[in-house]
Structure formats: C-alpha cells, structure tokens
Image (tube, rainbow, N blue to C red; front, top):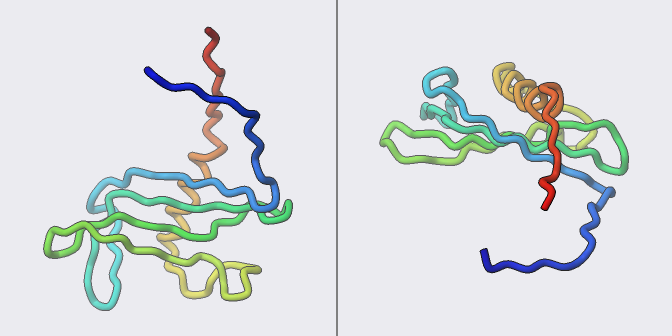
Length: 117
C-alpha cells in the first residue's frame, strides 16, 4: 500500500455523531410512502449527543427496493421540529429499528485493539 499519514486527529465534541448501519432481512419490514410500498434491505441510523446531552436518534435512512425493482432512499426524521424530543407519528417499527441500531452500537460489547507493528 502506498500511503502516508501525519497529524494528531482530534474528535469534535460539540456534536458527536455516530452512524450505525443494519442489514435488514428483506420482507421483514415494509415502508409505505405516498401509497407506494418499499422493501428496505439496509437501515442507517444517525445518533448524536449535542453539547454533552444524552445520545438521541436524529434520523433513520433506508435503502429499499420499490415496486419497479429500483433502489430508493427513504429518510425518516426522528426529532421534532424543536429538536428537543421524538417526532410524533413515527411508526413503532421504526423505533424498533432504532433500538436494534442502538444495541449494535454499544450493548454488544464490541472491543477493538489497534494492531501493533
């Protein structure tokens, strides 16, 4: 590999964000938007902790197959317009996807050790 790198990376702590992707089994979730059904196969949930506040889910994005076989993106805003709580009317199954993502992000005991050498 022909790569070099320098510096000392710093993470901005003002608004830390984590994006968690989930591969969904096709057929286990159906999203209906404007009367059209979509079969998601991937979800990406964005979590944030602005200014040290507790982590909250901001958005869920789904890669889904439409009735014509084309892949489309369906986004769901999870925060209300004031950004101080959950958006009303979000279907319960979307919150289940968020809970799965949250579990994947921190509750499964993922550990990482940097390679030596």
